[in-house]
Length: 409
Image (cartoon, rainbow, N blue to C red):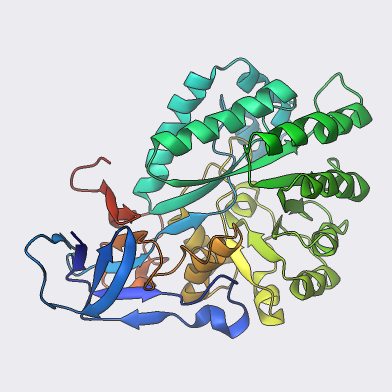
């Protein structure tokens, strides 16, 4: 039996993979009307003329004349956490100092929370993200800051992957901050000699990330940790140049990381180095918006030929935005992206930043049938209806996993 998505007003998708699109190619979307999508065994079997004869056993899903886009991919989140930090948020809004502990305060709450409780709270957040069109999500650890709790978070992600319809990618971010009461060198040693080998041996993460910036991990510290991670078989990511231009982008290029993320303060040399090394820039406009900081120079990056992806950075401290539709809107309104570039950045390029663009990120024959049906007249209304949720239906691997009319999955 196959599934057919019919009555599509617009089918809009980037085309490509497994490498990301860059420069002018980011604007080149395929736009089709009067078509239907045939799905078989979870993959797109054909994009064909509307009304082409269906088998009596086919499942028909009516798009209601709406817009069909690839499933949105969020390649940078911290979606497993415990507790909230609203006092920190409100103090920041009033430009007041607040010493609530930041990352370490969330780590303390995680240490006090069981795996079961973390799964319940994360599942609620994930359902909300799914209802906004996210079909693949990367989740980082980093709120453990010790062996026991870092592994606890990664185990939660592994269980979530089995119990939820979304696609998951886990990233080990033991080097997010430093635990109180422990020497800096000792904690780094524990990451390298204990945590990374365990994570690799038990296949708890695909990537290793380091927060390389002023007040966090230095260039040399990040290089040492990431080299150890690569030696253990993990792929590399880097929180880079968010607070200060300290050469994080250049380090990502030297190590040939898959991506460098944030990049609000990236240098021109960093842009060129990342381009030459094939490192993807993952930009997080929701964080700049939430912190009232200047945005990453997305226009300069695209014009230089550096491929960019978009992510939410959903976390309890600096960005509670968990909708990629809102992130697309911010990218268009605040970073100078065209809607075409933003849609590419949140789909195919986001998939490439997770090294998954051969299978997801665009609606092409042979790729997984991960798609979103939007209650819109045309795709250019996505940023226009900022703050609204036009998602009617979501399919992952050809299965209907969200239906607005039923408000469930």
